[in-house]
Amino acid sequence: MRSSKSRSRAKNNRNRPSGGNVVNRVFDSSGPEGKVRGTPQQIIDKYNQLARDAQLSNDRVAAENFQQHAEHYLRMLSEAQREMEARREEQERQNRERQAERDRERAERQEREAARQADPAEAPQPDVMDFAAPEATPESGLVETPESKGAEPPAQEKKEKPARKPRTRKPKPAPAAEDAPKTDGDAPEAAE
Image (cartoon, rainbow, N blue to C red):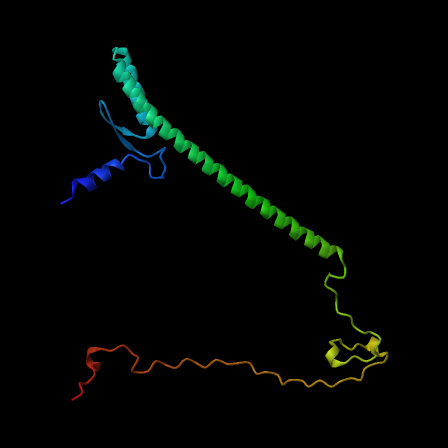
């Protein structure tokens, strides 16, 4: 069984904003005419309507009471909207700072790239080969041509490969008696 103390504590905290989205949160308001349920804006509208009705019926006390209830929710709503606006401005400021940092980094990268392209010492250089040597060595990677020698190269004998014989296909074997369809007379004998 619950104690009445814990129940009353839970009831007191029910209508207080818990840091969530107060603007769209649904509240239960216990006003003089009974409960009013809805978002803060809906509750404000309802209490303002009740205050107008009380004014038309010349009940100034009830009209003032409804206006005070509406004012409470109006203050709560405006405070929540101020907090949301401050949070939004803070996020926008952080986003602008992040974007400025990215822009600075991009500009630095572009400057480094432009400096690297403008400075020929930092550009990748091709390998230098010595073409003054008359003979080409196998490790140089150069192909020896008749022009580089200045004379006709001796004819080298090429070993010819023997001609390949065309492959012939083996004929398909005739179907064996084991593969032929079985009939009733060909039933296998039972092993004993």
